[in-house]
Image (cartoon, rainbow, N blue to C red; front, top):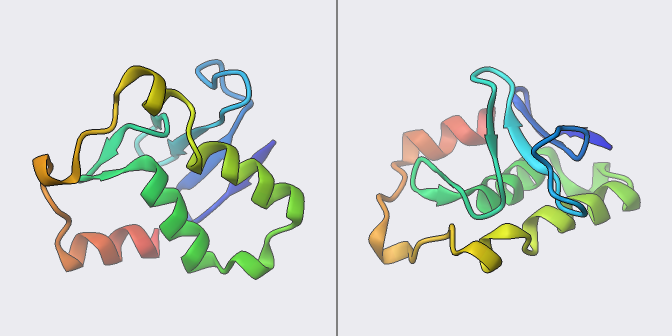
Length: 104
């Protein structure tokens, strides 16, 4: 499955780096691939996906799309391999950076 969240963000399990049952997030502009616990500008990739879903409006997603998204936002590799750092140890996003992520 492939879901375009915002202009440049795609969530997919059709990429070779997707773990069984856990999709990857791809920034189509940079072609960078993120797993759930990876950091993007000081926040986890899970938070970026949640923000993108909120910006797009969850009511516009099909139930199977929401289930697919939850496979990414609920876990995967971050808990197993410790990718996600404590929020106190990472640089926080500025308002402008957060708005940039929101706009896609």
